[in-house]
Length: 115
Length: 113
Image 1 (cartoon, rainbow over the protein chains, first blue to last red):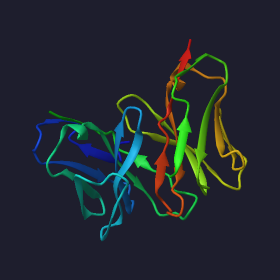
Image 2: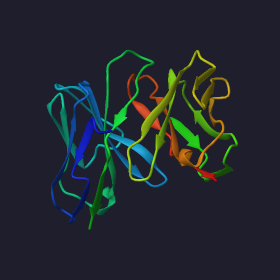
Image 3: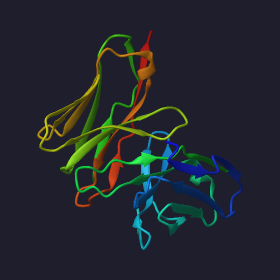
Image 4: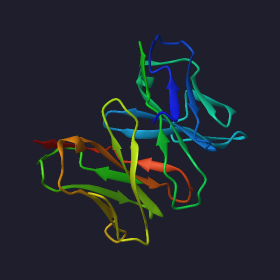
């Protein structure tokens, strides 16, 4: 979805390096999410943010940190990358429409390889 | 813990037939369930949402059912086309936590011409 963009689209890094994945959205949504996707494990939530001042850990936040710079921007950092963080990373957004209407809009993904 | 199961094996069907994908869940009662489509190398795209008090939802050739007693959702694509080939993910809201989704691992559908 062109309304949600992620940079870079592909990244190769070495163990121990710090890297940042960026997400921007033009949908005007308050809520943003970071997921990783691994074969056989599906999408797993890393962090989520319901507004600029609200940051929450997901189910697999260890080794990651995030920054919500503005409503439209949500960055994911790997402080010291390790090989098992090799995965496909997705950013997503959603709008506050009340319970029962929570659909998410995903970016194109960042493919990360940690050597 | 919350668990979602989708057929891990690929589903192969002939063009024109109805594809039926299954999503089973355990250990909680979601308020709603969603289905997404994911093409290789791309992000998931929302298709349909069905609430706990709805039995069935339709959108064009797509139909979703939600049986809270069986803890199961079925996703149907009628008159399937090769362009329907993709991975289909089901997602449920996390118990006790609004606006967070837990995703199944997805089922790969291949429609043969």
